[in-house]
Length: 217
Image: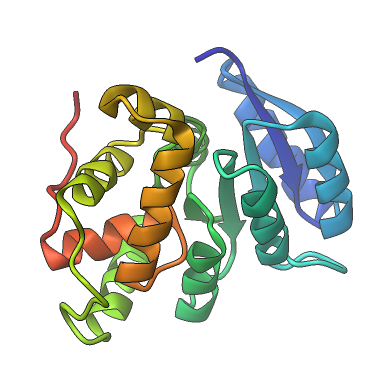
């Protein structure tokens, strides 16, 4: 992957400055636009079509969660990383249900945030370990194992590739099917698992033992 193009949205200029500095110091990331509001971020996203949008949960006018939903409607494969001061369950689950690829706390160190941006740009999930525990706790609170109907073998195959961080196009190439067919499989998976995002689908499937934990390489 070449330079990762990022749009950064946070209503605090000092925070944006700090994030921009250490992201660009990595040598792999370029900030192509900064915004202090949700609508400002949306305009920059539409203009630049970045690889990753880094959004604060709370922004003046339109929240980072609403921008995430807009991104998912228009660009399903664009990376969205929520960078927030809040680790409360409602914020975390709302972000993942909106379609965010990752959720990292502002208390994370520079290397962790750089790694998260790189992972999200590659189509992978990026979650703070404490956030993962919250997700698993949330999901375990649901009726364990309840699905509207079982996943088909092909749907499990697609979901396993999603867990490895592959995009719809890469999954289609691997399985010899079209991007649209992959998208259709994901829609069915979301419905059966009662989830709303790739990250939540993978987490739910891992909890149910439907797929294996991806291994490096």
